[in-house]
Image (spheres, protein in one colour):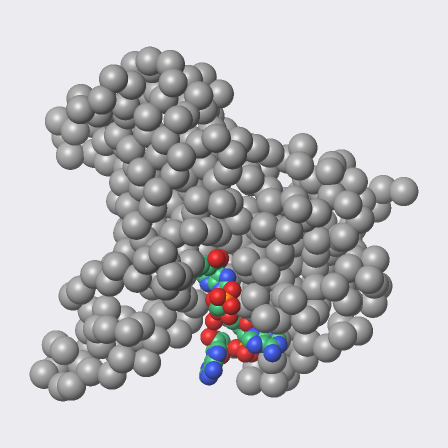
Length: 340
Ligand code: 25A
Ligand code: L14
């Protein structure tokens, strides 16, 4: 039976993504009955405002989910692995922002503009996975091109903001910038090297083949979301000293020829995408403009003249919103519209 309002739990409510989830639930007027904010002992007992009321943050425990309809998780992979199964067992649908369940064949991996139908296939595990931030903004732009001209291969390099690492990444960049500008020595606690005034070609850990975990996530998740294992994808992921908004330089080789005006037209019509592409007046997507916005921004669309059927583009989105919290709330919106 359909409900008018839902009981919603946010696990990891005090983190960078959790706080964004809470404000997006408010902004989009998600029909919330009871709200529950969950975190660790570090912040249990503190308060977060929701719809003009101070809501107490509770300690996340196994039975935090009794009576809840939906749980939005963003407290890291280990916490999701431990607690999401309990939440699902309590009859609550979990939308999980960590990488813990994304590649599980029984767990749908969903971007609502692209594959909302995948939710239909979920095997009663009660968990829906939210993709990686870099993957989400890339597939948003790839999907219309794939439908029109079938993508053979993608080469992507990312320029990722420090907020991807949560609050501790934001703090590290801020502190290093302050220390350097006041001629003091810096501390590196979060990243393996100085991030201020620098670029680090490493996000997450390295595998034996020389790729990082973030690069492999982009490859595997893109194939799962586009439901096509035949696409070749290779990625280089780079951390840059930007607070919010990931950038991506993407080279796409298609089976069928597709013109630049056609790509512009398809992307302009696609839901959730804004094309900003006017080189003559230096107009293209920028992280500082994407921050706080919901759309995925695409520009610098041009032909790759070194191959037969190639397109280059530049994609930017707010990694905490479309890359994480907004996409999760959009999944919850599909759930209440079609399923619970
Ligand atoms: O494991 P992963 O998947 O790689 O994820 C690692 C981290 O990335 C963030 C998130 O960090 C996650 O922990 N993250 C996940 N997905 C993301 C995405 N798509 C993403 N970031 C960007 N894009 P975060 O700092 O944003 O949020 C962490 C949240 O998880 C809660 N939490 C941690 N352990 C918990 C727990 N909740 C319940 N039980 C547990 N055992 C955490 O709550 C926060 O809400 P908190 O109370 O522990 O943290 C409150 C403040 O303290 C800071 N903090 C975090 N770790 C430490 C810390 N302070 C001191 N020492 C620490 N070791 C937090 O930043 C928060 O501000
Ligand atoms: O897989 O920018 O969701 O550090 C999200 C944040 C991966 C790393 C994920 C980042 C993480 C990413």
